[in-house]
Length: 498
Image (cartoon, rainbow, N blue to C red; front, top):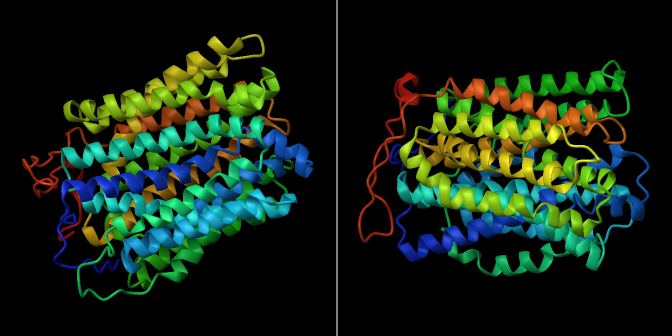
């Protein structure tokens, strides 16, 4: 409960940046985020080839190629995000990018299942350090207003495009070269990005501010808790909920997350999750929505659609990658061209409600697909519906959980949001793999379950405030927007002095 936000930090403060500097920051942040999200999905289309090449014997073991990345990503996002606040944006960005690039090289050269999974986990660690700072530099470069809305829309669209493009790129690389290319492609991209890191601001704290220590007990509890819970759920793919190892893992996960709450509220001088953040209704409810959305979108939907197209429809890796192209185009077009305009006219709650309903309808349609459906009604039609729905509600949800946050806690807020998203993806993949069965054949049951999750998001969205964010007007001829306070009704129930 002791967040030591500098008194000089405005609730919506941002660095003083010219239009050119802001554009450079946006470009580099989006490029890094593209790499991170690309690797969430780029291996999916290659998984059947990986299974044959490295000799994975069970579908549960093969799923860990995706889960290891998502789990390390989610489990270490909170400390990774706090590093941006404590050690400086530029230094943390470069460290995460270097680790991600090196792990990609090791994974691309792996000769055994264990080494590949370990490399994917190391990639996840690098992503956990890198991803939060991409959002932090945006929220500290662009003040709340139209410019931040556009920047977040571009960042969100790049995330969607990166994930969907990963499926296409994975198919092309696997078909033209081998599955190893889907990891090795990160090496030259990462090296180029490292040369451009100096475009970022060097620090996330005001000049002369003492840099407190990272909350290591909280980081350990968060990592152990999320890892144990996901491992316990994943064991149900090949076992049962009553299996002793499953029960021990689930118990350890709950105990570690309970310890995290105690550490953050009672003992940490610089908590990973400042308790004041969670007293904001928008942060608490918004991150729950992000977690549930992550349990369906990106990692799980790409994973199960890959097996549907290859195992059920009989597509090749390249054809599967091309099959994901509509997801990419629709997500990009709607995310950048439509959603920002809708956010200027409608309350965030309205867009989250409408988008979740539309996305759920697309998942229900997908649940009815079979081997006889073919591509138009079995993939394309549902893709149009749920991709549009996701594009409508993801950016408003991101804006809700990051608006009005003190500058010194910007990294914690972005880390919490990214953690919710990635942990949702890892936990969702593990749970849905158990629903799908050992051979991933229960396609309809998986997407029907996703429809239920979207229904829960609709109910949660009703708790969000009705009011639209009151955003400051943009200065003309300046590289930044005028400063102003967010007066969203969600924060009317905050603790005094927050």
